[in-house]
Length: 174
Image 1 (cartoon, one colour):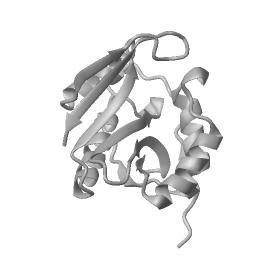
Image 2 (image 1 turned 120 degrees about the vertical axis):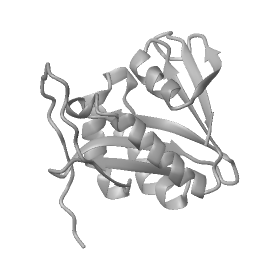
Image 3 (image 1 turned 45 degrees about the horizontal axis):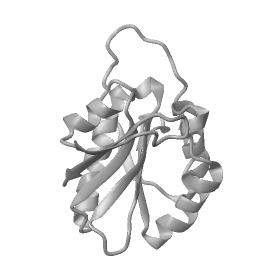
């Protein structure tokens, strides 16, 4: 069955509380590369983006081998509005949350939490019992989401990022 290519939702300004949106979720697959790259460009500063080459490797090689797994969120119009990607090691019980992104127009609706929660359930069925991640110390919005979801700080890394910023490692049992 052929599917229409995913697009990203253009950013829009809103001063009122965002309306709830019904999202559909499905596993990430290699054909999603272009849409994921558009989301990456929309959500991250150039220094924090992963390259197309890196994503191509993850989606076309690691996903089929089972060393990566991800989840997409799609709005009612069929637009890609959220992505999460995890790295897995064979035999390991820890999954690394490699990336989570939510389109600016879909932020403030709990989508990042839904993506991580749904992914955690799926990972648990695969035998994973912990999730780990690293985040910039100044990324208070993401840190707030992780802490609300039960992640706790397990380590700090001074000058972790190329620009010298401190990185924070979070972990959570699932």
